[in-house]
Image (tube, rainbow, N blue to C red; front, side, top):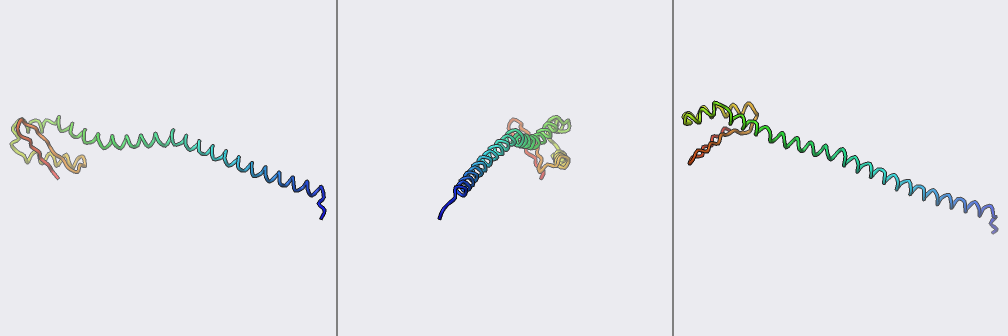
Amino acid sequence: MLVSPFNKMKKRIITILSFLLIVAFIVISYTSYIVAHNSLSYQLSHNTLPLTGDNIYSEIQRDLLRPIFVSSLMAQDTFVRNWVIEGEKKPELIVDYLSEIQKSYGAETSFLFLKIPLNIIILRVF
């Protein structure tokens, strides 16, 4: 069987074009992968991670500031000071006070810890 030079040339052109298409596809795919990877890495490092860190910081701050605020409020409350100075005579008054603190601030528990030279008094309202 005789192969014409035209058919030989046609096969060679098809082979070269197929090879070029495959190489172009691989290069374009690799380039797209690199661009997508770089874009995603940039997005994560500059937008997502800082926001996540800020959210975590806000949650921790929210969880810590409220009890600190309430304890500061109680430490400066004249009722509590007067109750302690007067000798802690009526514990039911402080129990009522603690239950109101618990209700007002939505706390799970409230307590007053007094350290007097040899005595430690803990009153809890659950």
